[in-house]
Image (cartoon, rainbow, N blue to C red; front, top):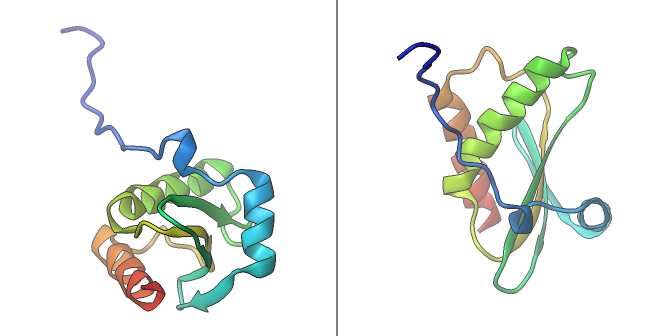
Length: 116
């Protein structure tokens, strides 16, 4: 098959599962902050839904392609780890490009256990 390429499809969050800009502002102002060396998380408990946003500063990762790649990696892991009943803003503190997928997942698992 000409032009066919094997690319793994990353399951993304549906629009209903992403935080809008007004909800991001609300979570950043009123949410509880927890953190680790790699991530900081602000969250608000809500009833029966989960919404998430991943934020990476330009100071943390300069290039937009690399920033978006790390955002997608994090969202891919959060898809299976994010508990229901929270609005969350996940902020990446440092460059995660050198971390393996297993290390990144372990860091997120540790944070999610602190949340619940």
